Image 1 (tube, rainbow, N blue to C red):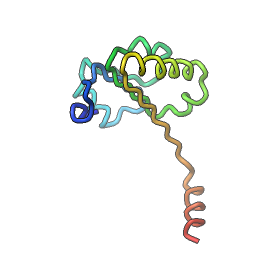
Image 2 (cartoon, helix red, strand yellow):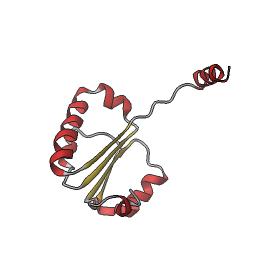
Image 3 (spheres, helix red, strand yellow):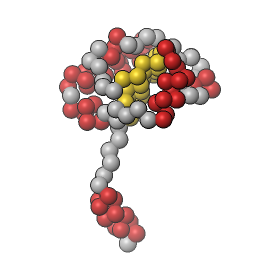
Image 4 (cartoon, rainbow, N blue to C red):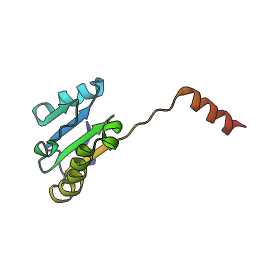
Length: 113
């Protein structure tokens, strides 16, 4: 998103970042997008009120909510089907699942054998 003009034909009109953590990357995006950016730490049920044509929405590290909260799932489906198609928004959902270290090493040993 820092290099958006190089990768997108249509400029980003509003950046919406929904992330539980405010790391250095989020701070860089806040500096770059300023008033064009919306930075949230929870998924709002009125997310559609933040969307405008050409918006870029990134939802990071909410796999537990995105797979269990029925209201959030309905809202995301509505946003992805209607808004992405009719208003040319970009919607990225990042799902991360980390396994325990022990499971990783057990599976690693199996592959080595």
